[in-house]
Image (cartoon, rainbow, N blue to C red):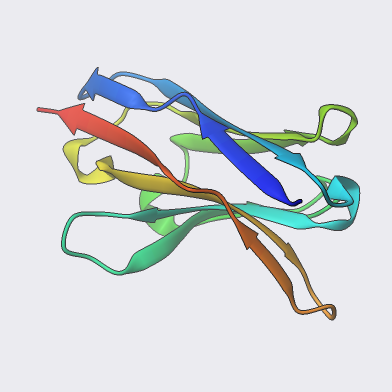
Length: 118
């Protein structure tokens, strides 16, 4: 069955770094675009970063541009989010998402907590 498993979350002080990983299985990973979403306390879920299936195209929400970097390794069915200069406002549950346009396919991980202390 399809699985997206996130890892790498935790507690970090403001200004610190974390690297989130997501490993996919049960689907053709290289055919899917991948994204990281987050749900901050009391807020709606929001897209943080997105990467095309080939890795050639990336997008970021404005608040993380220059601080976060999304990447993927299709040979390892793995996606990562390197987060630098973390801010308390980055505190959220982060979700891995796999999507395939035109096929109405959309998969989600269970989420992982990132807490940034001030």
